[in-house]
Length: 224
Image 1 (cartoon, rainbow, N blue to C red):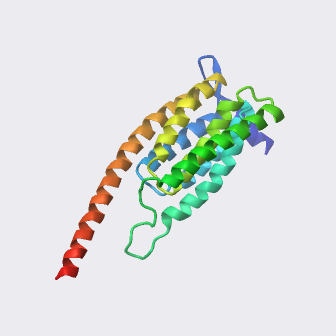
Image 2: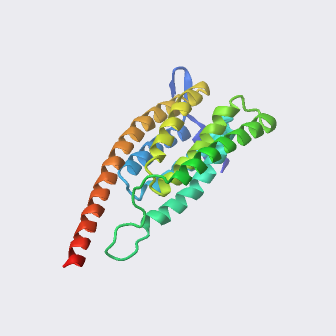
Image 3: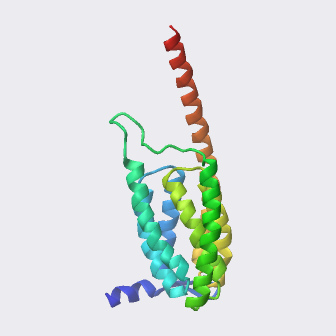
């Protein structure tokens, strides 16, 4: 067991004078693959994401990013939920139950309020109970990422905007900790999130048009 942990923590190469560990490389590969798969709505993004959570859990504990480390455990639990949700079907001929949609007004209010409250609580806890020197951004990444992952599971299109903000905060946060490969990864995440938003918008418009056409057809049939 300890030999395996030593292997994960071993240096793979260096960037800007900072060592990049094997586990950070694993996190880079699985993270990039997971986000790419989400943009295209591939169900297998969820198991790959769980592997990424395990990798980042090990990485963040070692870097002193404790909120991000706890976040990985919660991510994995939500990933199981999303995996089940994305694979359920109402019938043998139907599409998956979850289709891309916009957030309701209530979801937006609860999401914003919950993110602010959890960020404040987590920042206070990190400042009081750990040696973290970046409690506020670490806490925000935790809170906003939870919201975004829940939205991803429900295929709420606004989750991409949340991820974009999370990535913008995460890039300098990880760079400040010397996690340069992870900072580069989140720069790639940012680009993938923008692409995901574009793709999901197209799919949302297509779905709305199909439902509109179906509704018109149903009304014509009922009128005859």
